[in-house]
Structure formats: structure tokens, C-alpha cells
Image 1 (cartoon, rainbow, N blue to C red):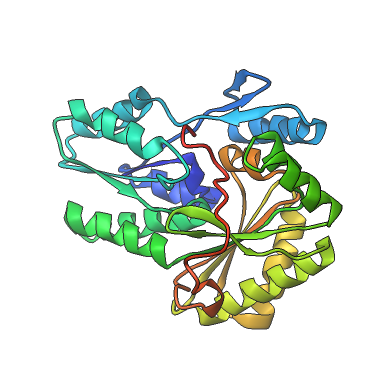
Image 2: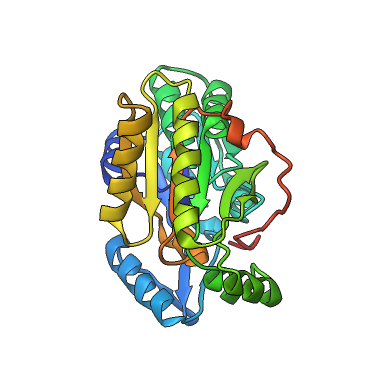
Length: 304
């Protein structure tokens, strides 16, 4: 099993996955001021947070095919019969394309899964695939498990400011200026692999209120027996945990709360103050029923 760092697994999950001996995570590069940063995750996040606060240019890139090829080759050399490679949405990133290039020289089947998602929604796909593989399922069933788990997870994102999106060229400067003047704090989601606008609250307090209401409603609609609620954050673990605990207490006391920092490759595009909720198996949630949201904003360039 191979995935990329956009899956954002919490440390406990990552350690469990690595302990299976059949898992590899390929890092996605982050460039700050044109310089590639390769520190460990904690140091790189610290460097990224400072850069975002200072308004320095931050860009990201897909993994090099050679990095993915090395992971596939490692499993081939270890005697594995096949590899399932589970990745960030192909609508947001070129990682799926890089994986297709990387598998061309591999002597065992490599199945590429486009989760059409990101963050722990992608991570839930990875977890489902690993569980299917551990049960002895074949490559088709393992890939299907990843696809279905990612599709059933719901994602809600609250960005604090349009400035980071503007600096990255993801929002028209005029739109960003008007949004800043009107204090618009959009709530975003993922639909068909793309970032879409769910609502456009005016003022940060209103955005926080609507984020809690919509995430809570989705959590109540989850069909999982003990659903995972993940609250992602950018350098605000205490605030994220508080949000998660309130949502669990109010809506699903049986839920498993996970607090996970957004990885640098995602944080770079949404900025400081961002919170995201990922709710397992909440596909029927009424608030996400409209898959043709009014406005599509590619938050990540296709070469990410």
C-alpha cells in the first residue's frame, strides 16, 4: 500500500500502518521562497507557519515519479504480489499522473486509486484498503474499499482569509479584495474531486457558527457505527480539539475524535486559521447533497 502525505494520518494511525510492513507514504514537496524544504514534518510545518504569517510565497508540487517508483519497487523486491496506490484527488493534483508514470517499469500490478478527496477523507480510504488487504482481499477489492471509504467521507473547510488563496493565484485579486471588504469567510467542501463553495458567511463569528452547525449535522447523519470525526487545523491543535469535543458532545458521543494538523502540502494553500472537519460515512448528509455547488474553486494547482 502506497499513499501520499496529503492523506494526513494522525501519528498513531501512521505508526500502526507502518508496523504492518506493507505500507509506504511518499512525501509531497513544499517550496518556500523558491527553496525546497525537506526537514521532518514538525520542523517543516513550523517553517511554513512562519512563511504564511510573513506573506512569503509558498508553492507545492506533486511527488517525482521516481519517488513513487522506488516505493513500488521496494514492495516488488520484498515479494509482494501487487500494490494499491491511494492518492489525493486528480482534480487537485498531478500525483495520480505521476503514479501512472511510475508504475510503468514495475513487474507486479500497481492499481492507482484516485480518491477524489484529500486530508483524512483520503486517509480513511487508505485505512479501509489496509483493512481489506489484511483480510486477504485481492487487488480489486482493496482498491474498491479505498474508493468507497473516501467517497463516503464528507469534508467541510473554513478558511479564515482569502489572502493565501489570492497569493497563490487561486482567487481572482478583485474577488479577494471584494471578499475582504465584505468580510466573506467561505465554507468549502469537496464534490467530484473539486473544491466547491458551500456557503459564504459574512464575518468570522458567523462562519464559525455555520461551520459548527453544518459539521454537526453531517456527524449526526453518519451511518458508521462509531464514526471518525477528524478536525484538521493549521498550527492550532487546542482550538481544533475544542471544536471536536463540542461536536462530539452535542451530536455523536459515540464518535472517535481525531485531531490532525493539515500537512504542509495542504496548509500552504488554505492558510493560517483554517479548520476542516472530516466525517466518516456521512454521504447522506443533507448539507452536502448538492454536488453542483454554485462556484468551483481549484484550491490546488494541477501540478501539485
